[in-house]
Length: 170
Length: 428
Image (tube, rainbow over all chains, first blue to last red; front, side):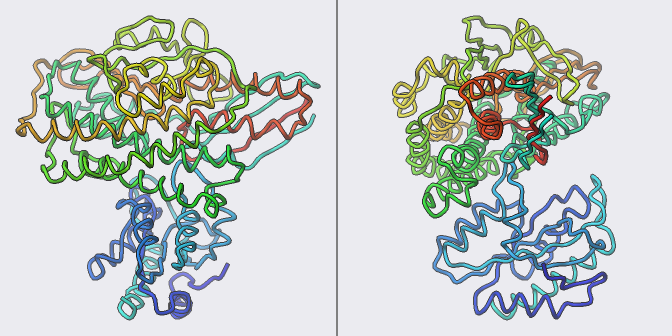
């Protein structure tokens, strides 16, 4: 696991360069995952929503139905790179951001009654599309809580990095 | 004492686990433990208006969100003597069809099938069964779409209300649903083919009782005002307490239900057993080809029942959308009284969901919600215990019990939310 971004975000360049390397020349899609009703668990959704204004076709959230979006991408001819953004317990300070290797996601993700990120990523991989998972350490996932300040900073950081990358690639 | 653990009990929705306690080669107990704490929703809605209640109770579950919404609406409409217009009834049918396809497609192809094909997960299936994984996603996407069109959002849509809907879909949207549902029937039929080709083991077989709603007009359906029991009896939904005697057990936060002191099952299997003869079209043919008296004993066949049900749901959509499109948008029906009691019974993907309400002077006085998984828990334990006893008698090692037990629990498609716990084997 690569720690790329401390609290507050000090290492935008690291995240930016690594995502740019992984994405290559492909168009970048962002899929935000989480539950907006549970404080920092909505960090992924918040990132996707921030990007939707400028990249409406390339930034979507779990509320839009991830399976369908990934299925369509996997069946398209477009050279695409998908960045999943999600809150995850990294056992770090709130707001810590990490680019988590897909192998690690596969090894640790628990399959509940949903389509897992690991399966969606595997489907993209099989279709020769790329993917990565950016995780943000939540501080509080209390029901109906607001996103906490360090996580909000991380959301801004990740959205800024992705916005810059999408401006260049899309 | 020996303890074996499988981490986690995955591919079910919920914070639960299985504990097998062995005394030598004797199975002392098999319990399905529900660790998820009570959320006290029934207390939370006391004093709320019915309109607020139907916005709160769907939050119980993000998978069966529309079932909860609909069960609450039905219960409250009965309590307040609201007679919804035909177009609203049809829209409710359509949204339930969408939820059924969304949930059954995920469970059959991606959660249950890997067990039977010998893969640890759907990811591992991807190379050999990549097309089937895509079928699951196609069906799920479509189910989500139908839920979004009818309810306003994929999850926790707020368009359905008491007495009707806030907005009705356009004829174009309805036509697209009809066309797409026809296109997707072969994907659902493929699920039936896969699950009908499986050699189902007999080790979990125990005859049980099945309950489902009695859909109106002698049709197969997902809502009704009375309950069919596989012993041939029928009970008004308002008498649901006679069917679901509840009790608590030390190992579970969820209440348990029994009928005449015995476990019973709800779900797709129960719907097929009680209403399968009412099916039409290709779903009817598939039911006739596959149904046998083993369905009365073997919970693993619930997966096959879910697959056939998906065919039915997709085949039902064109007629339903056509009827909706033919009717003008009605105004919402209003309550004709401010106090009363009523029970809503609908078929969530996992079985009968009851919402009962007592309303006094326009506010909720009491609420009682009984979920399908709560009704199935005792039955799951009965079948798991039978399985453990038979496998041990056959000389299986302790570790070899665990996957078959997980498969039984998964076959019921239990919804406990956020599975993270363990299957634990204790030897005393």
